[in-house]
Length: 470
Figure 1: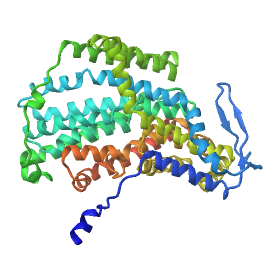
Figure 2: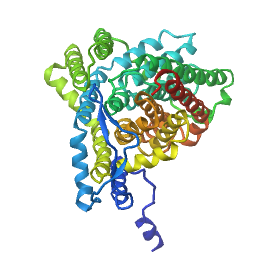
Figure 3: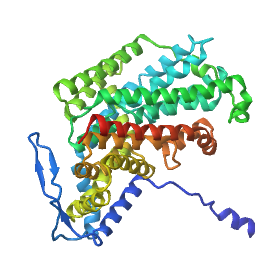
């Protein structure tokens, strides 16, 4: 009986809630809040560019209905309709980059590099981290980098390092680039679109911040790698790495082909065209989407996929981003509740009143800290932008903080905790692939996260005080 009972019992395991569950819970909380928060609104004016601004001191109470049961569910559809341009932008970019990814150009590049670094193994770390850092900064690469952990761990161990170095080259590299991005369409593109500032404007300053951020990350991994090279037993993963069955052929089976070289050149040309179009012609979401579609078509044809094969590859990329794209719609749903009940301006009024007595530089730092905390709950970059920027944009107007600075605070706060928080499904997936426990990863990476947090605060302050004063 005891044996039978024990077999019938399921072992309880805590699961991280699905992003849709988190955001629908936020919608419900917002609906409840409409019964507790009085309705009110600010007057708004448009400048010569058509950009809407909140008029400071114009807040006044109004009559409005609180959210009912049906509007809670209606908010999801309304949110998706409102955010449709951003949702389909994410689908198009994701589909296009899947066509690139299926060319295996990245694997070929790493296979070619690894054979040319014998005796110069330490050079591998900055090369790999800069590659992934550029991917995170320019095209929003993150989850696409995870399969390369399986390549970099055996390569790192073969070269006298450990699995933390192999994993860090990928995760720290891509996350640092993603955090200090200068042209990430999923974070900067979405956030600047919501904040009504030119897409990818301020790129020069962001490139400088990216270079500093990446330099610190690379030095951190290099310092640990040098320590392990001198004394392998100092590795946090020493016992685990001894048990690994390293497959050398996993790396050496990849070599760069002529088609893959052409594919990489097409990607570089696309990024150059993107930067030129944004700066010279003020390209926005529609033009950028068209550029990525052209890139996908050319890459597909160059790699012999044909029209149908390219389309199928594009669709597979869209399928992978269904959750990430629709998260934006759910996030907008929460804002629909606040907008229709006219409570969003009351929240702005309350927050601005609390911090209005502080110097505006502290307000900018406050935005940054808030975004860091919010990313623990909403780990999707585009979802966090959709949830927070509609509130941060008018708040920055009220507090004397430039909208560019509020976007910078968002992007730095959004990326910082991606490889640190246990609520990040991507991090947990990466650690499972690497065979590294969260506790050991946490112990290894937390000093770097602290350093990068301080760097982010410095960047936001510099931008606010010296570069983009309101």
